[in-house]
Length: 425
View: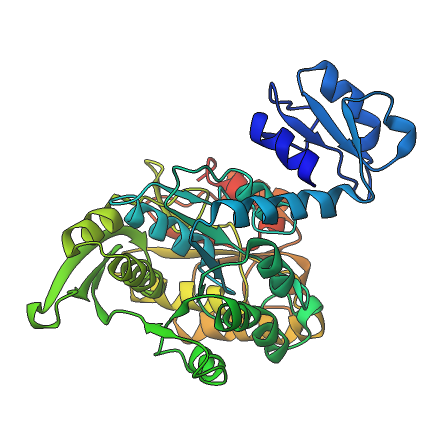
């Protein structure tokens, strides 16, 4: 590790894709189910990498190759070593819903005062977390590391790699049930972040209004130092979320925030970011400016005006909790000619049919008449709405029955590829 870290300090950029080589970088030849990057290590060197880390001796043909037992474990160990060496305070964020939005909001807020590093996109797994850590530089004053999981034990493993000083769990809900088995399985896995910072860190930012999170946090007290979310209330949501947040000085009352976020369910994410900002010494004005500067992208609660229709595109991910929240929020929106285009929810295992039935029931309870559903999970329960096997069938229907002058919620799991219908609408 000493030799590798010495090389990394000279060439502090890593890459894992031989198709997109970065000059003067160190190539890590990761293996996956359908590929073995050891075979591409030489090509990476020829395209500009300085060194290549491999774990098959036959590919280590000269001193530019670093032979290790396991490339992935070496990447993770290097990242942890680098993180320990710099000692940058790290905020770990996980949760069933809202973790990426909360990460982005928190980063935008903290940038009002600090030089920070934060997870790009959703690089939040066993490869993405170490790649994020290896982007740390001495000038970074804080780092935000997003952590995702779909199987038991994954958050605990990511905590051992990133070693966060602070933890923030946005919420826990029914998602990836094929892997977790139950809501209790989700809580155990996500709760590993609280457990780590209770033992090794400085504390957790906790939404004390959430009974699941409070139960998880109380079980670890007094070892876990809890920083409650700042109080806040929704003032308006038509369509953008406006809130009043408690000022850092309790005697100063509240201050207004007018975000570019769609949906009242984002209020918890806003409160989370404001709480972190306040904890790290930002003024109310800096917090407000940071929150109002953030504009969602990547199909996460985006408002899109196509000229024909007005769309709320939330097609990056979906599970029972986020789907229900989006439907309820959309029902409260004051807009004429509302329409739902919803894709099935993935990875729900044995509970899939029940959860899809509940969504259909929620649609009916909220009085939606113009509804299009996509996916076999919806088709199996024979809903009282048009239902299509896939997005291609939906797009064919839309070509023949194009909505006009509608406000449309477009939401579903990524596997539905609903982002492809945006241009049609």
